[in-house]
Amino acid sequence: MTTEPNRYADFETLRTQALTLRREGLSLRQIRDRLKIFNNDLLHRLVKGEPPPEWTKRPRAKDDLRARARELRTQGMTYDQIQVELGCSKSSISLWVRDLPKPERKRTQEQASEIARRGWEPTMRRREEERQATKRAAGDEIGTLSERELFLLGVGLYWAEGTKDKPHARRERVSFVNSDPGMVRVFTAWLDLLDIPAERRTYSLMIHESADVAAAEDYWAEVVGVDPARFGRTTLKRHNPKTVRKNVGAEYRGCLVVRVLGGAELYRRIEGAWCGIVGAVPVTPRGNRT
Image (cartoon, rainbow, N blue to C red; front, top):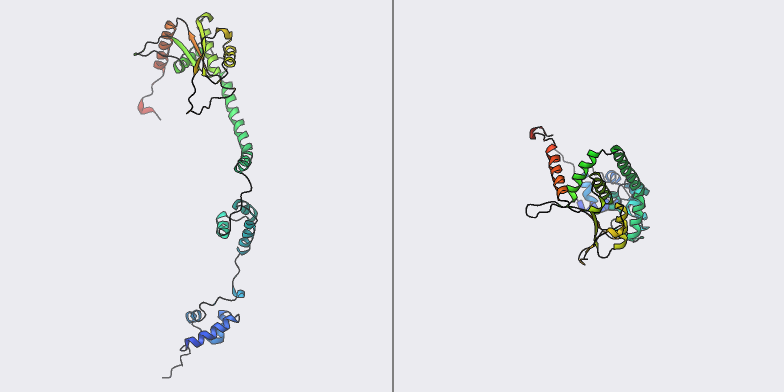
């Protein structure tokens, strides 16, 4: 039996020939046909370490995008701006340009915040319009209060915001404190409903020492419809330097204290009515709750 000569025996000679052809610009297919080497593994070993000629490289679809992204980055664009310009993902942009220096910030933090705020303005206006529309609709549903409704409302209002009697401290007196003018007006209307005369009502102010006390007294006097001279001694709250106060400015007017002289009997009526309200609330059996 005859055997074919081993044409692959002299590896170094073949490698020298293959590298020479590779450097001349031949492709692997051309080198294979020229040297008659049809073993792909051997062919790749012969040209190992020698880069293929440029004309054999297959162009990639994103090469142009990558080059353009790098160009835009060097011009100072952010990832978001490059994404808008090229329409590709920020993850791809990051891979393409992460070796480039970050562009210098062209805006101050305040300017950036202002731009962001302006962008949110249409959304905030829409939300505010929806908020106000909901409030108006809820207000329109109330209509006119009956005397019974006002009475029950006043009892609940006092029990939430008024002074209450305690077993350890007898306080059968009527004293209502609040900073909301609307609540003060409702409480005043409730006293009118109960025929509490004006001479049995006293008023005083609780306010921070740094506020405009005279202006606040004038404001509350107008709310309850009395002369500011009717106001008793103002209670001043001392400033704590460790506390950052939020209730500052022209809108801060402290709290109004409304007291009823000789109010023990009225207090008892309030507490009794509140107990009646609690007792009248229907109790749903635990098993029926959803």
